[in-house]
Length: 315
Ligand code: A3D
Image 1 (cartoon, rainbow, N blue to C red):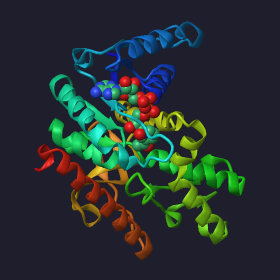
Image 2 (cartoon, protein in one colour):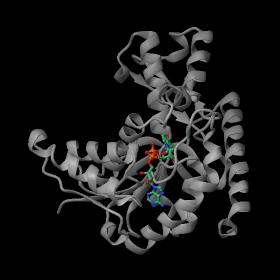
Image 3 (cartoon, helix red, strand yellow):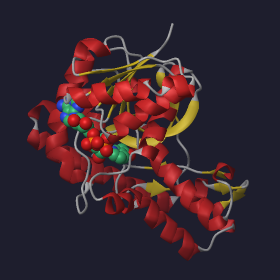
């Protein structure tokens, strides 16, 4: 039987997700948006590319939650993106209300789905989504680390003139300026990164990775990145649907791992048919551990601000 992926939000990322899933024939797609015309228009447009691309998936646009019934995966991009000068945290109040509605729609119609949140501020939105929906924490996950790692690898590949596929790496922590690129867990052609790059150059790349989203917003002026975020979301959805058991950095619920309980944070996880099947604890040196702690502190502070906006988030 064909799999079903529902995309909540048919904006820049939602539309790109639909197109990529369609091209890769991973699943049929339901594109949902409160603006029905956007969802229907994009679904029809993508469907009309099928005879050219040879894809055999079905895609529909809707603004009715019943249509997402029995989805295998739900990917959420509903919300507002950043504009120049805004931080991800500036989106908190608006996107929290949207996530509450979305969580209710998923709980009612697709409680068994693997749910991937992309809406910012990511770590707090995914935590709120899990609480509002009541879905098991191994089935509710945030996309950030795959994108942040992809940006880090890209910048390294340009600097070192090495194909990006020859660079293994990982970025941990929250999706924000406190994210934690991990040079000690990065290899280039099998060699440790620090052996092949000067410290100043590496520091610049780490800084550029942390500000990778803002660099794009400055160019676009009217919205934020969407091609790479969509590609990252698709990799996570595909690993679940095809039980690929890939190890991917995702915002996952910690239950004692890395010394934290009851909070979402970007860590390496195995994604397979049961959702998050394992959280992998890699060894952190003092600097990395300190950076990870700073990142978690920032997420906690923002979640406290979210709790002030909506008492339903108090567990
Ligand atoms: P955009 O193109 O504005 O699309 C958002 C869509 O959500 C619009 O079509 C809206 O109509 C729709 N929407 C608004 N409210 C609702 C609702 N209640 N139910 C359903 N749909 C609704 O934004 P985008 O696609 O560029 O970005 C979407 C989100 O992803 C934003 O919050 C971004 O900040 C975030 N984002 C996250 C990352 C990460 O790496 C985590 C990267 C880039 C963007």
